[in-house]
Every structure is written in C-alpha cells, then in structure tokens.
Amino acid sequence: MKSEIHNIVILTGAGVSAESGIDTFRSEGGLWEQHRIEDVATPEGFSRDPDLVLRFYDMRRAAIQTKRPNPAHQALARLDAEWPGELLIVTQNVDDLHERAGASRVLHMHGEHLNAWCIACDTRSPWTKSLIERPPCPACNARALRPDVVWFGEMPYRMDEIYAAMARADLFVSIGTSGAVYPAAGLVRNAREIGIQTLELNLERSQGSQWFHATRLGPASEVVTGWVEEMLS
Ligand code: BJW
Image 1: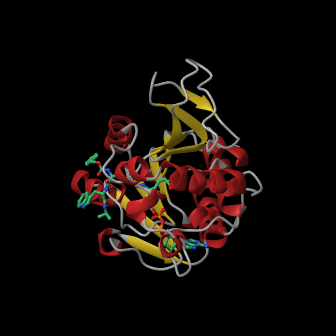
Image 2: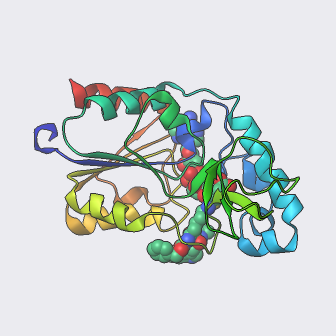
C-alpha cells in the first residue's frame, strides 16, 4: 500500500498531546468534566461571563507554555521533514507542540492559544500572557481581545484548504481524537467518499471508528512512532 501513497492528510486531536501532560476534553477527568461547555466554549458563554472564559483560557495558555512535545509530535515532525509528497497536519489542538517539535506543514482548524483576536479590528496577534486584565490590542489599542480559538457554533478555520488537501490525498490518518466534534469528525467520511485509504491511531476506538479501513490502538507515543517508522522505511 505504501508505494501508492504520495499525499497525506493527518488529523490530530487532544490525544496526541496527552502524554505531554495536556488534558484532553472527554477522557475521565478531562476538561469537560471540570467545566461546562456552554459556559467556557461558546460565544454565548463568553458574552454572559467573559471573566470566567478569559480565566479558563489564561490558565490553559500559561500551562501549555510549560509543556514539551512528546515522541508522537516528534515522529510527525520527522515525517513532515522527510516525506517527499504533500503532507498536511490538520490539528484540532490549540497548543503549539507540533510546531515546537519542528513540524511546519500544520493547520490549526480550532485556532491557537498563543494568538489573541481583536474583535474590534479583526487583527490576530501573537499572545503569551493573560487577557483577563483586558490589555489593549497591539494593532488598534481597543480593549477587545479574545482567545483566538473556535467555539461551538463558530466556523472552524481554513476548511477550504482542508477539503482541497483531502481531495489531493491518498491517505487520511486520524490520531488521538474522539470523533465527537464536527466538521473534523466528518473528515473520515469525506475520505471514504473520495475513495482514499483511512487509518486511525488512538488509545481507544473513536466514535467514527467503523469508517476507517484500519485502526491501531495504543498510546500515541508508541503507535504514531511505529507508523512513521513504517512510512519512512
Ligand atoms: C489518546 C491518548 C494517548 C487519550 N494516545 N490517544 C451534527 C453534525 C455536524 C455538526 C454538528 C452536529 N451537531 C452539532 C454540530 C456542531 C458542533 C459539534 O460538532 N457538536 C458536537 C457536540 C456534535 N460543531 C461546531 O459547532 C463547530 N462548528 C461548526 O460546525 O460550524 C459549522 C460548519 C459545518 C460544516 C462545515 C464547516 C462548518 C465548531 C467546533 C469547535 C470545537 N471547539 C473545541 C474548543 C477549542 C478551543 C479549546 O481548546 O478550548 O475544540 S471543543 C474541543 O473538542 C476542542 C477539540 O479540538 C475538539 C475535539 O476534541 P478531541 O481533540 O477529539 O479531544 P477528546 O478529548 O474528545 O478526545 C481525546 C482522544 O484522545 C480520545 O479518543 C482518547 O482515546 C485519545 N487519547 N490519550 C492516543 N496517550
């Protein structure tokens, strides 16, 4: 099969960063057991109680800066560097661990913790500090910065680029995502419709597991590293 593969789209989720010590959302003890989605991950929640939402993201923005990429990020960065065909890592994660591992062909469909978005002038600025004190936007000075992340009910970023990469791909690989959130969860069905190979790498089967041609179960640090070795051997 490997010799027929030229172009690859890889979808990653919270499971790829779990072994770096970043909480997943839906696992036992995950973020959605500690916080109500409606309160912290919707535009309506932000309008109702902006301080609550800003504090939630300030805490997570500070935490990710203390974390390090794990062997799964490193393996994907190696694949990115050495794969001769097209490759796109579409990540749902808002951390920067793919980039810190050295990957460059990365697309953040749910935004990035280390960006702030000014809802007054629509500028996105690199941001590592907190937002709770309502700091001014570096571009327009308005005190209207919010986390640059995609909440429920908002449009994920760069979907056209994702679907275009899918249309050129021979292989779709999903890593460490529960398949609970659309449109990311629907990509495997898009892949099946266009007739490309599909592979799932996860700790446990995802909600859409039946759509994949093959599934390999185990921690990302092991299954991703093994798969990348095979692809580059
Ligand atoms: C390991 C591991 C280890 C653990 N090794 N693995 C029906 C159909 C279509 C859409 C909808 C629908 N009903 C409702 C909708 C809309 C809604 C939606 O999907 N709702 C669902 C609840 C059903 N979607 C939206 O609103 C999206 N927008 C939208 O649809 O716009 C319209 C549109 C339509 C069509 C095309 C284009 C646009 C927006 C979704 C925004 C999601 N935002 C969040 C928050 C981001 C900011 C933040 O981080 O706070 O994104 S929610 C959260 O879930 C976050 C994640 O990216 C996302 C996915 O989570 P993920 O990564 O899968 O994590 P978990 O925790 O769920 O799973 C972890 C996995 O890792 C598990 O499988 C573990 O087994 C595994 N694992 N350790 C390997 N060591």
